[in-house]
Length: 443
Ligand SMILES: Cc1cc2nc3c(=O)[nH]c(=O)nc-3n(C[C@H](O)[C@H](O)[C@H](O)COP(=O)(O)O)c2cc1C
Image 1 (cartoon, rainbow, N blue to C red):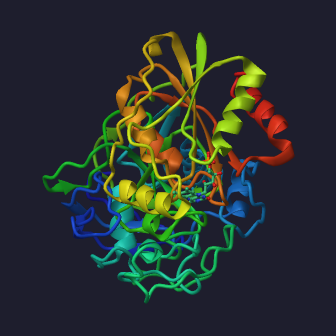
Image 2: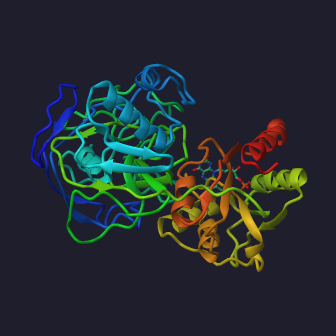
């Protein structure tokens, strides 16, 4: 096969003509992240599945179904990035195509000359999602939970402003289904792709890293690192995390009930291969420390239960300038801090962090992510070689984007399986905590 041979497979995938687009988000975009630096990306022709991979697709080839919300026509979720690339290879083998990935334990190399199925790159994904648009969503400046995408519809784009200033009264809450739904339930984007926003977020090939501001041709992500990107947001995300430019990242061996994937394929062979050894997961030796922030006491209660069961040391994070004790005021303060990515100064210091090999990190879900004091904490210490095991108290939004936020802020840490607790956790708290400690090897 030479470098320009065109692949021809009749598989119902959408043919995406190559082109150049502005990847990332402009400074003016509400709720943009610092990691969305706008830059020019040129994409070669490729093919993309119109739908997210379903559980029946997955189970047929892989013989198992890891999904939390079981239903054969629902998207597969709770899959790791490694599961997703293995599925792509199995699909190639079934179709007699050459597998795109050479998988050797945790190390995965992408053979660019292969005609087989693969994950889209992050740039291909955004290009395809946008389908020519430059707005926050491919549905322009807002996205309807009732008729355009499956997400945490109580929080459409811009609704946050109404809590404090009534500055955006055209925006109204929509339905929150609290579950993934059948792919293809809403109209596709202009290029015929369904559910690029919402339902399940989608693993892409790339390792997470900062963008280069220079123009890129067929970029394939950061050369090293343990995190892989997922895009588009899921059934459990606020609209701000469904934006075309929004980047979520999780360890390659992490999984979430709101993350699945869709499959792509190259249109032509290219030369070369991409990949290097994964950073392997750490095992916990040494001591563990419980670190938590709590506004109303629920997270503190979970931390106390962990200490009761384990005897681990614990530190409560306090801010030099505490948040207001008034609920409506803290809502506004927390949102202001999140939108400006503030790093509130901490009054608590941990002098002997070097002693600990694992940090059990607790916090309330605030505006679908971490409270900013958690970001201050993560940036104050070196987590190389340490494990972070998150626990989160929430009012219905589970982890929101908090695990992605922690992953991005502590890229040298390995991440344990998180525990999300509804408010105080009620009567099952003790057993939920002990099962979670057990699963993380911390009991
Ligand atoms: C500023 C603020 C923002 C919140 N945002 C969310 C949210 O986005 N999703 C959610 O499920 N709960 C949200 N909650 C509810 C808290 O996560 C929940 O009440 C939690 O139990 C509080 O833990 P704490 O008592 O340790 O502070 C929010 C609460 C506050 C004060």
